[in-house]
Length: 208
Image (cartoon, rainbow, N blue to C red; front, side, top):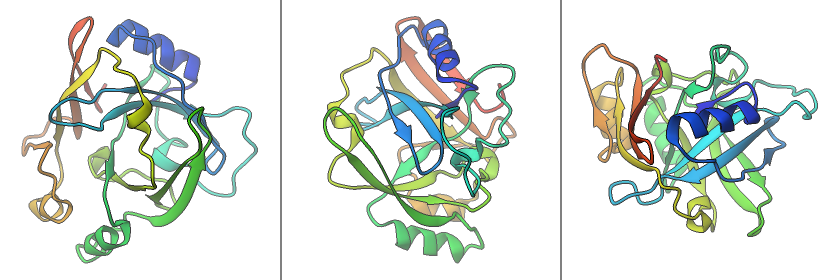
């Protein structure tokens, strides 16, 4: 997930950095945000997609903090990688398991948005303060309904090669079953994504 001040700025960044124009997205009335998406799936991450997200200037004021730290994340220097979202089959069970480790990963909210292929429905864990944890390395947990958005996305020319996490302890890694991602113990960026793109290999991280 890359945050931007505006979706137009995010699209321009995507074209310059990754060599493609991002696909369409939609509006999130629940959180006053909107996005653009494209598929980055490969053998290792078969349903992965890339999200560029920004606060929707046309949305009415909210009575709560927005998700993914968007009220506080600094994107004044340009769009940047801030977070990732992990798909799980039973969201309450994983939230309870994290609570047993002393981690509040949020409350479950029902969300939806319209698409040309019909509405998408999902359940997602969001903290009341909207804060990202462990520098963005702890994923936001999501439980998709009948349809997953990546199933209707065409190939983009960009593929996720690897996702590296830092700052998470072994107990969190084991609890969430983080088998497809890399977990590093050094002091580098909390989250790092390596992508194959039309412009060649690109590395994004939460420090830049």
